[in-house]
Length: 259
Ligand SMILES: NC(=O)c1ccc[n+]([C@@H]2O[C@H](COP(=O)([O-])OP(=O)(O)OC[C@H]3O[C@@H](n4cnc5c(N)ncnc54)[C@H](O)[C@@H]3O)[C@@H](O)[C@H]2O)c1
Image (cartoon, rainbow, N blue to C red; front, top):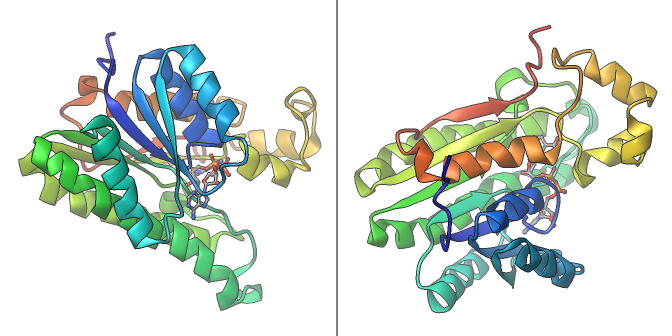
């Protein structure tokens, strides 16, 4: 299948790590022109170098999605650097893991501020470019917990539920401009966000780690997700090959909850 992403301009928030970074790798292999927008730019040079080696064009933009003006600056940077934006992947996010009644509003603020308000900021800044072009694909990274809930994740689930609802509603407004808006709902995926929850175990150790083995029992496919699993679906949603798909919240979950 030709994904037709050669030379396409792709912004990935949270692109310096985990799902965003792997998505950047897959799109670089397709020859995309990437803007990696992340608040963490410590290792950004090695991220960019890898993407260029894989066949993409890659630029970095230091972004805090909570800052609306900073998101507008990202849009201006994309216009100046590439003159277009064909794909937005909004992957920047944080997780909160505590029983709701034990948590305090201080802990809710970053989750709602980054996962919800930050995602709105980025969509609001970038979508007008797509409207002008009369084409584009937005992929908002939500979570399977938005659909099924999870203990110790009530606030995080609320934030991702908002991402799903926003995506469905916004897609209705954007269809007439030929801009597709979809959400993706991963179940547990082994990224820096989650490996800490498994005691920071290495890739080699994890297949025999008791926490990992207990978690995999919930997955008919017998394993947790890898960033590659999620990135592949995001890349498909970015591609014109999915041109009749919009307003969807697509689970990529190894069959989670159905065993
Ligand atoms: N890993 C999972 O199991 C899982 C499951 C479902 C959904 N998700 C979602 O996938 C997305 C990516 O998560 P990941 O697992 O790759 O995590 P990750 O921690 O590896 O990557 C998240 C990236 O977002 C960036 N980021 C955080 N706050 C930011 C901000 N304010 N502005 C700009 N960048 C910011 C971080 O610097 C980091 O590079 C998140 O939205 C997360 O909620 C992850």
